Figure 1 (cartoon, each protein chain N blue to C red):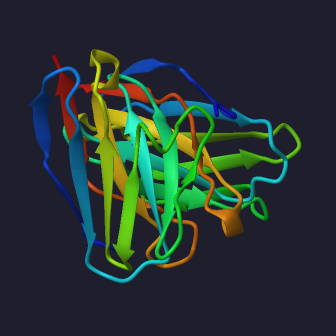
Figure 2 (figure 1 turned 180 degrees about the vertical axis):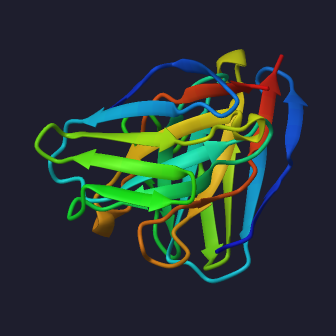
Length: 112
Length: 114
């Protein structure tokens, strides 16, 4: 089922730094690219999402960059905070068939 | 958003037994999805459950092992049958409550099989 490749597996960033997580996909039919944030003991929660008609989407400190030709997208967390420490999953789906595929996840640790 | 409640939140079970996980949503939804998240791993779709029809299973998952019920538009159950330690995972219920492709997840049911 793994059609979305995510890196790095883990990431340690100092408070105030920029966290960058990358994903690549194979299926060119994917048209919805969300990022999910998961804290220990909780279910994943949608953080931010993008569709392929734009190259960037920003919500507060979180930005998705999307490169359709390279079939890659990334999550940037600006001014990273200890409260951002969580596991982040990228995903991709075809909107009308609800078939969402998840990346392997990145465990982010933000050190104070 | 959707509020999704799962029961049990966690359980420890003996090998060879079966456990049924319940998922209740606070709104009517067409499709409900069951995912498995093995320790430290990503989410893998087990099956899609539509009300009034048989669930659709992903490759590697079969109905005899993971029977699913969907009696109405707000409720579903997933049973993990004849459990082995390899079934130790978090099982997550998910819905697309707004028909936008955005999935909402329950908090999961953490299953440990001894």
